[in-house]
Image 1 (cartoon, one colour):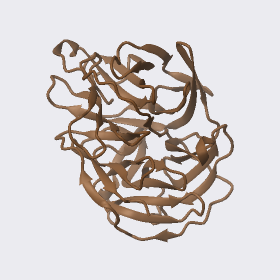
Image 2: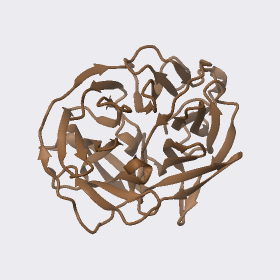
Image 3: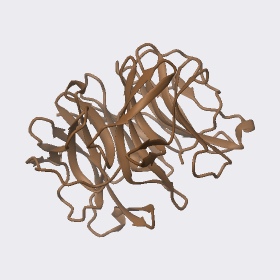
Image 4: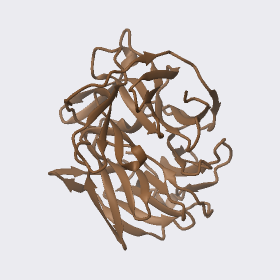
Length: 382
């Protein structure tokens, strides 16, 4: 699992802004129709600036609502065990403005992972933390969503404890927390199953809406979002765009739930449905940007067994594709032989922050490729 130690060595800087963060978890559906999608490209647009220089991993970026900061998860090597931390960068890179992690050796008997994080305009920090006793434990011993603020993230209220059971499914992992109002949020639910030396997710998942009432929160799964692997709010927050594992379509469902419809066939150049996964999604009022990667996922028993499809002859490369929400037209705007994951559109801008290398979006939490960094691509959207 993604791991950071549990306590609270951090920089006490109060930040004001809203984290716009979005995503989900996995299964397979047949929908009533497929929207026509024209593919334009390939194209190269924007200026690429590397924001982080980490010998390990920087991953899962997300913007503050005002665009003045980038939250992201990172791994630090200056600790006795492999920590997973949360930080905030200035929008153009540089020294971290804030971070939440613990490098104390006294915490070496337990590890924790901050798997989702969101900050509202009042400085309230919503985050999910999974904790395991023992350095090599796979399944979290404690997992909860907490409400705090950036100045004192461990003076906190426990809002919700995992697993969350819905429809007989115990969701034991949560990510992509996003504030949607003063007391409401959304999140991606997943089912974590330990792999052999890796952390992967089963072919289950859903998007959840949450409501905070005092010191507690309740959650409800959005009907029609089963098998989601990423999501974004669209149509002024009244609907959700989302992706599924082994499905290269971009789907839409009302936030109140319903039958999914197809926005576009994002990738149609590979015949094998398990090759070329969609590994990231972000939307604004008119378009979505979707990351695709040469990744094949197969099953071994009850586990997801990942393999990099680039090992196969004629495998596709990774790329970023812009999808029109009104027409379903698809345009390639960037390509790479490294994994491109979790692209996020800057609020009110054509700029995009993206992870290059490392894990495969929210299909995976730990990978053999220990090197990944964040890049800012200015003017990427058409």
